[in-house]
Length: 639
Image: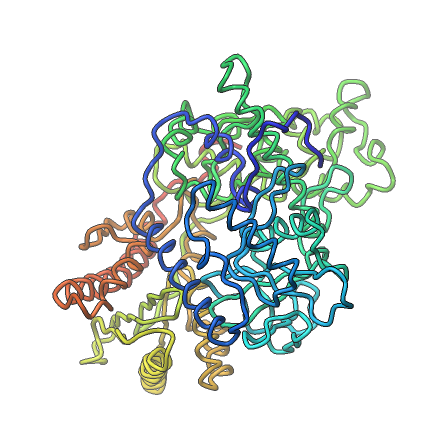
């Protein structure tokens, strides 16, 4: 994409703009209201990110005494200080300094870009001409993960350099690890790549850039590789490179900012984008403006769970912008559309040919495979097709596999009951065990510090094992304490399981949203040589994800986070501000040895919070088993 508006007056933008919500870029320019302050979890994450970067920089300076630290010589954030840093960075690049830290690239006035990569690493072994550089950024998160499916096209094999030699030329591929693809990280790297190209300092042997994550190595990415599956006007979906995605996103936001400036000068000019609910909204300072706008009337379709930007755009293109309008679509017609049946020629034929005309005589031969789907839906003739919804059938030009689900979700959100049974669910079923263990873990970016378990003995024979127990550490992470705590937890859990099953009783362990627990179980289990044991447990029917149990049988049209669904069983947390983000803030206090009293209070909060989490899963399970079947069916709200 190239800009469609005159962007010459747009202030040069940093690398963050391309990876942030376009609506935020608009409101940053317009300022429609008083922005919300950053929450404590956000401030904590920003501060820890700064501290991590400082640690990495200190380590690099120890290893590379010839490195040039720009920020150390030209500190400050005034325009003059920024200019000085840019001048110093340019001089270091011209001199071919091998490692430039905290630099500021020469502004790209034509591209409207400014940027401050954490590191610039020289292209080693250059031919003596102008030095060339690659950008590397420091991020306080993991950049690597174990390869579960080596050779899969969906994974990027990890190519890494040690911090002792952070150059691409020193990188080696690790067949056991994969590189995590974080679009935000790579879009920021693409921004620096474009700036290096504009300044004439980009490497000429490929667009490669790196991320230093918490593993302490440089993980390299090919910015020209087609990593991203994106919408396409001609092909539906298309694989695109990071550079292609970045160019589109950055140019789009330049347009947005240009039009926002025009709106600020003349309110008759409409802003370019309207609010839409996405995951970023929870931490956005402009949610105080967007939230009330989206909740007007029956509410915007993007308020529904699972309706992201692409689905929102499809609905908007079809004149459906509210949950009420989505709820009014026809479910049976939507089921055919979701199956890929193009209903448009059939709807066009209704009324123009006899009702007795067989659908097979209307549908082109290349679409004969859809006749079976139509027949299964009771549509064999044009007379049958007359009962289909012409408006819903228009979605055939952009079929969404979950359109029927979205319709039911909208109906549930607007219904009179907090939850409904899904179609075909007569009775809600929950796997139960004679002895049940509810499990929940607490972690930070650095590792897992707490595994909590609540044992419920439904036989009366477990004795002292019943109740809550916590396997935890307050020692620094990462470190050996994480593995020690997990080993104790795993030994206890498997010992209890073996004792229960050995006595002829059934055993089940439960969590809510197993993706988080499973990832940590596999990671730490692999470090302890327990890969097969852990994998076998996760794959067994003894490990139950209550989120899947709930979501496969019930629909609410709202968030199905544990805090929301546990309320169906009238469960309430007995700690203030319960939530995973607040738990991370409390963890910092719990490990602050300089504030002993505050640390003790924070530790107790974390233990109480974790106990409430496992008690909540038990309360939800009991409600699902005893009461959920009494929820009305979603089919009662329409066909």
